[in-house]
Amino acid sequence: MKKILIFVVLMIFMPGNQAFSGGNSLRVAILKQADKCDLKVKGYYRIKLPYSEEELIKGKNMFAEVNISCNQISIAGALYNVFGVEIEAKKDGEIYINSRPYRGKIRFLIDEGKLTVVNIISLEDYLKGVLQYEVAHWWPMQALMAQAVAARTYALYMKDMNKSKIYDLTSNVLSQVYGGKRGERWRIKRAVNKTAGLILFYDGKVLPAFYHSTCGGHTDGVAHLWNLDIAPLKGVSCDFCRNSKHYRWQEKIKIRDFIKTFKQAGYSWEGIDAILVGERYHTGYVKTIQIFAGDKEYLISSKEFRSILGANVIRSRRFLLEKVKDYIDIRGYGWGHGIGLCQWGAYGMAKQGYDFRQILQYYYPASEIKKLSWDED
Ligand SMILES: [Zn+2]
Image 1 (cartoon, rainbow, N blue to C red):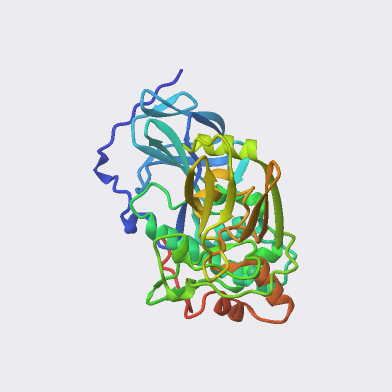
Image 2: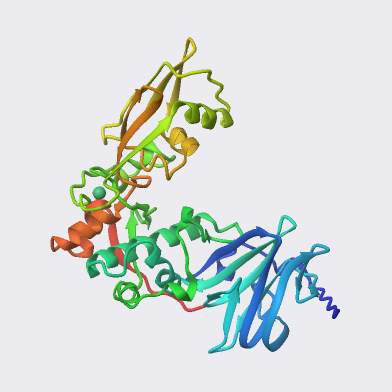
């Protein structure tokens, strides 16, 4: 087995330094603390140090396993005694991680003894890959454009929040799904290109432009969910998402299963005597749920309630519930956290002739749209 040992002075490793991470590039984690991954490169490539131009090795075509061995990064059995390496394909070359193609550079990092894989990609390319998972490519152009501006703004907000971390965003649904090259659709590309560089601002800062699938009648105030309270995210009524298939939902949960699930979260109940909505915010979202069990009363926040039962079961925090015989009947509206842009509402507004600026203004009142120009890396 070929063994390459490369020693470098690690002082150049300064994650979080804005100058290193580049103006319009994003660091998207595509694998977090994994044991290994498959790497395939078609065409010429070079392996270099992150945050620097120092080249370690170059070659053509590769199919290899990447893992961490003796606390070093191992690519096809070659060990790199550094905190991380970057692989870059030459023009027309392609890089695949676990059979998925990616644009830009791939960075392999040692993260608590495991392998974290980060795609370094331009913001605009990232948007072209991610948006098809957020909205359907056949939606009206103005709705796609509103979504493109919201997603661009959100990504920049996350980049700023995560400056000192080893990546800005992850590729799971918590911070948008990123499908790499495969995800692109021409209308989505067009929406990204037509809004290139447009960002939402509030009070001189990049707006935390949260968005969700369907609000079900009203968006919620961000202060009800997270430690943030700003004018554009106080919640607005929305009649535009009625055509969403997520507008209404219903779940019946057997009391037995309910008790079992809550037991794992530390609640030990023999039976449930009653369950009620405790308080509700003015936006219609549930604040607390009251549960009477044994001779005690429990008050659970809707946020905790949803996280214990699962976000795909309790699809929103807008619901009614009642105990019926041996089950709990929950009838709700909308899907998602309910903060910021309602995606199906944007669809409905675009269908009614509103343009993307009006849509954004509606869901993020008091925000401003500005065009940024990038200094190229
Ligand atoms: Zn809505």
